[in-house]
Length: 327
Figure (spheres, one colour):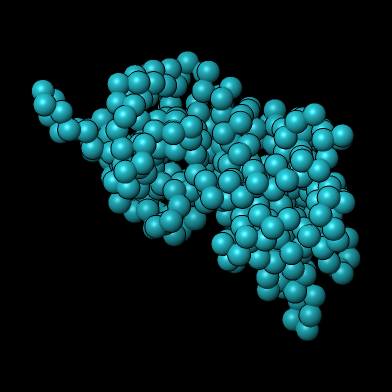
């Protein structure tokens, strides 16, 4: 079946001709991003942002190529940059809306931040996506899969959201290392390294180090109203400075994933050379949609229904974390 949008297939008991029409309709949505509700909120992208979108498209296509998937370019029109004062999201800076075939993103204070957010959302866009016609008395068309995230066949429950975000952000951090080598990011990378080196002992409001291995951008005296980590530096000969940073996100989800990977590795050292080999199984399952590989690995390691149980605990991360720690 020809590829018209992010959706690879439609699940459900309807004729193949109807499934093809549904995918065609989603293709029209992919090509038509003129949304009335974004008028007055979306701003035009800068020439540098357009270049970054192109760079990230190429990098995420390279990820797809690792798994023998065709290149899938996301047009700049499908990335909607929302002006700071118009942004509605309290807990996130960007979101991929599969039903609308687009990404909405709060305007970012730096090109590196714009690149990281774009990379993360493009991975959602370019991972395995599927629609479904739900089971039951009143069948409806709903999203079935986005990466590892799965909605039940009745459409009422969603599993593996935490795992999906953890894998996506871990991949973003992994592959952005190469993207950051592009000269367009040089000045911001140099600036960040300088600030981190100069103010390495600065702490945040909680008394913890401001900079850590997830920090990818830092600037002093920024006028931007960020929600990221903020540190203040007091000096005898130096005026009060505010240091703003940005980091890779979903830390708790990634920590939980790393714990799971570590436990799998300890019991499968005869099959894997390192933990990265195990992460590749997660990555491949997310990109290709083949959950059998991941399911077999986890259930052969911990027993039947372990993967399902992890998914069922999605709504309470503390309980989910405790379960994974107990494996």
